[in-house]
Amino acid sequence: MTDKLVHVENLSKTYTRGRQRVEVLHGINLDIEAGDFVALMGPSGSGKTTLLNLIGGLDAPSGGTITVGGVRIDQLPENALARWRSQQVGFVFQFYNLLSALSARANVELPLLLTRLTGAQRRQRADIALQLVGLSDRAVHKPAELSGGQQQRVAIARAIVSDPTLLVCDEPTGDLDRQSAAEVLALLQQLNRDHGKTIIMVTHDPKAAEFARRIVHLDKGTLVDVIERPAA
Amino acid sequence: MKYWRLIWAALLRHKARTLFTLLSVVAAFLLFGLLDSVRGAFAGAGSSVAGLNRLVTVSKISFTLQLPKSLLEPIRAVPGVADVTYANWFGGIYQDPKNFFPNEAVAANFLDAYPEWQMSAAEHAAFRSTRTGAVVGAALAQQFHWKLGDRIPLQGTIFPQKNGSNTWIFDLVGIFHIADPRQKAQEKLLLFNWDYFDEARAFGSGNVGWYVVRVADPSTADRVALAVDALSANSDHETKTQSEHAFQLAFVSQFGDIGLIVGAIMAAVFFTLVLLTGNTMAQAVRERIPELAILKTVGFTSGSVLGLVLAESILLLVLGGVAGVLLAAVVAKGLEATVGIILPPIVSSVAVWARSLGLMVLIGVVVGALPAYRGLRLRVVDALAGR
Image (tube, rainbow over all chains, first blue to last red; front, side):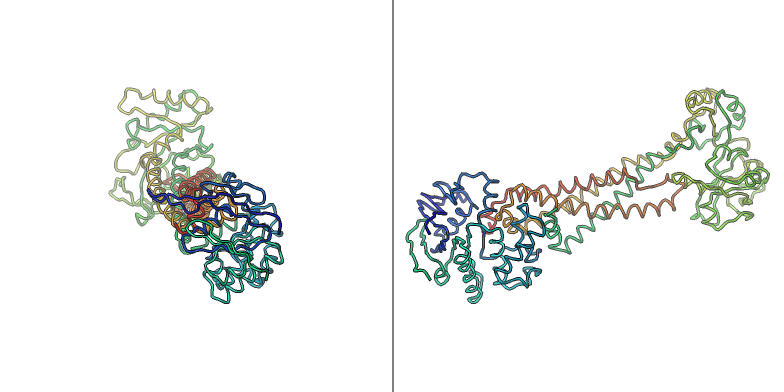
C-alpha cells in the first residue's frame, strides 16, 4: 500500500441552516492509500458522513482540496463530477436505497446504463456481481422480496458492478441484525482483500470497525485520531 | 431505449394510482377525440368533391321560407345553368318521433342532380312514373327492413292533406346506394314525388323550399349564382344562391359556433386533466426523491433525471391518450350511424390523431415540468438525509 488514492487537505465544510452557519468540518487532512479499508468513526454530528460524501463527490467542500486518483474532484463541475462518480466510486448506504420497482438484477445494472455496454453485456456483468455477493438465485426478485441483509448485498453488487476504484459505505450495517451485519462486513472485507477495492466506511459500531485496517476518529468536525490495526 | 425499464418501473411503482390516472387521461382524450371529430366534421361539411357543380338557392331571409315555383324556368334560362330542380322539406314521422329521418318532396328530375346516389334505371323510371312513389337510401331501408313494393306511411308534422288527413302513404319504388363513405350518411334520406305532395297538401301549393342549380362549368358558379339572385332582386322573395358546401356550412351553423363550444369544453377538460395528472406526477416524484437521489449518486446527471421524469409524464399521457382516441374512433363510428344525416359524417381523421398526439406531449411536458425541475435541482446529500 504505497499509492495515495485519496488526498484530503485542509478540508472544511460549512452549512447554512436558516440564519445559522454550521461548520461541520474544519481543517481535515487525510490520506487514504489504494487498497486500504478505512473506518470513519465518531459521535453523531462529528462530520463523518459529510466527509464521506465529500470524498465520494456527492457534495462540494467549502474550503480545502480533495484529490481522488489524481483528480481534483472539488474542482469538477456538476456533470463531470457525476461522470466521475459513475466510473470511480461505488456507494453503499444504511437503508440500501434500491429502486423498489426494479428486480435485484435491474438494480445492479443501474450504473451500467451510463456505459456503452449492450443489454446482454450489462446483464452478464450484473449477474457476475450478484454471484460475487452470493445472490445469483435472487436476481429476479424485487427488493421487497428480499431480507435486509440480501438487499444490502444487492446494494453492494450495484456498488461494485462498474468496477470502481473506491467504495464508500455509510453505515452499511446500521439497519441489519448481527448475523446479516457480519455477512455484509465479511463481504466488504473480501472485496478489499481479494479484489483490492479501497473502502471507506462510516460506522458507529466498534465491531464493524474491526473489519477495517485503519480507524479514523472524528469529533466536532476535526480529525482527532487515526488507529492502524494489525493486518488480520 | 435502455432507460425504458426505468421509466416503466416508475409508472408501475403504484399500479392503482397509475391506473386511475390513466383512466382520467383516457376519458379526457376520448372526449377530445369525439369533440374534435365533431368539430372537424362541421368545419368540413360539404367539402366533398361531389357537388362542386351544384348551387343551392334559398330565400335570402331564411331558408325556412318558401320560394315561388315560378322561378324555375327563369333560373333554367340563366346562361351557364345546365339544369335546375327543386325540393321541399316535409318533416314526416314514421311510426314514432324517435324514428326521425329526413324526408323531402322532390321534383322528378331531382335525382339527376345527384349522380353519386346510385340507383337502377328501372327504379329511376318507376320513381318518375309512380305518383306516390318514394325512394330511400340503402341505410334507411336496412334500418326499417324496407324492400321495394312496401308501402310507407308518414305522419305529416307540417303539411296536412287537403282532405284533413295527416297520413301520407308512399310506395317504395327505389333504393339508392352511395359509394363515397363521406357521403354515406345521406343514405338515410327518403324522397318522394313533388307532384303528389304539391297536389295533396293543404297549403303552400306552388312554392318550393329550395332550388338545386346544376352549373355546366363549376368555374362559372359565382357568376351564375349572382345571375340567379338577380332574377328576384327587389322582390318579396329575394334569393340567396350559394355553393352546396356553403349551404351545408350555413345549415350546420344553426347548431352554434361548434369550434368555440368544443374549444371551451376541451379547455375545461384539459385544465382539470393538467391539475389531476400534475398532482399525481408531483406526488409520484415526491415519493421517489430517495430513488432519484440514488440515480444521481451512481452518476446520472441532473439533465438525465429531468429527462426521465419528463419521459415518464409524457408516456403516461401518450398511453392514456392513444387509448382514449382509439375509443373515440370506435364511438365515432357508432355515432355516425346514429346521427348520420343530421350531422356531417364524424370521422377520427389523421388530423385528429396529430392534434391529439401533440396535446399528449404538450400536457405531458406541462404536468411533468415541475416534478422534473425538482429532480433537476435535487441535492443528493439532502435527499439521502431525508431533508
